[in-house]
Length: 132
Image (cartoon, rainbow, N blue to C red):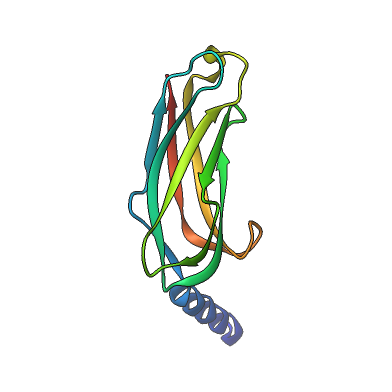
């Protein structure tokens, strides 16, 4: 292994160990609800902080199926850490019928610096979504 490669490994290891991390009060969390005609949804809350603290964070969501939409509120925070900030997570059916929505899905909430396209601050929150 060359000296350059060793230097690169050391630099990456140092950058990873000194970066901010998200601390979730619960990870994973579960949202369970019953699909009915019309709009069906379920919610839960969780809280997070960053260590060391950072400013201007934005939260983004993704889900394993287009049948479900996952939202987080508030979607941005002026500061992350040192105190916990509470978030409301809501999963909603995006189908025409209740039967089409039933199932188990996995969602993710990711914390970013400055914008939804900014650097991510790990780890993401896993959201298990169960629709009966």
